[in-house]
Image (cartoon, rainbow, N blue to C red):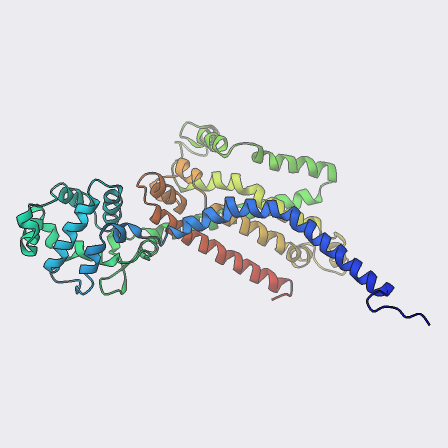
Length: 417
């Protein structure tokens, strides 16, 4: 009787060929996805990771004043620094004079204490000291105080001692209106300098109001479109999508024309007798709401319309045929089925609103600027990348928390939570 060698049976061959085919499919899938993955990694993930790293990156003081930091290790943070600290500061300033490190050091310390930049450059211009002075720590201290009496004040030395690490929570704390005391404890900044929490609150309030306004306008519009015949619905959707084909800057410029005191809206209101004088619609919160609602309305309409398209019309008719009032049938049968689209549209509009910059900058007043305005301010004007990164990091964290909350709520809605 002929025997079949182990592994050469038709079933085994079939399994091996199936496994090879599966591996080839996986390789093809990986090959197709790899360019997109590399693109996202290089263009999206790495720049964001680098930017967020700047929120805690703190190399300026450590690199420029290593001897001074070492001399302040045992300092209590409140009394006059020891003479050795003045000697170490002299050596560090001599080493950084006429180097790019001096500018970075002055800029970094000036973020903590206004005027530190001028103090450092005033001192650097006077170093090195005479050999007779530089060899005596006590005379070095006297020379520093002769240059500027601020070198005898503890706060200026505290700012150096606090930056004894290449990584610092300074910017993140400052973005939350907090500060680190010399003993390491965290406390609130002076109320007169507390600004960022109010700006974050303003950002979320504006985004929330815009989300509600787009929902109030977008839901009826999406419902009306969903009830139209296909040809008319497509025509209306084209009208809804027209703003996508126009630059945001152009649309904002159009709103400036419409909302100004002698604009079309004020002229129409006065012509029909609703007002006797122009209404202030520009450079205030109302103008920001109007323009942002107009720009972001399609982002609300599209998800809601998509969810409405998937709802069979027989459900509502069945409820009415069973004795329900038409409005009750709409509210209790139809509307709950649109919740996924409403949630997706609200999340999309809110997240986009949180990061808006150009509309509040052009149509709002000083009290209407959102957090993205200050990210741009610290990036382009004060060149404070650490503060800009910290604000961006906190904004990203808030967005991720909102998205995780949406995922949790949508999971419960679908029975997955």
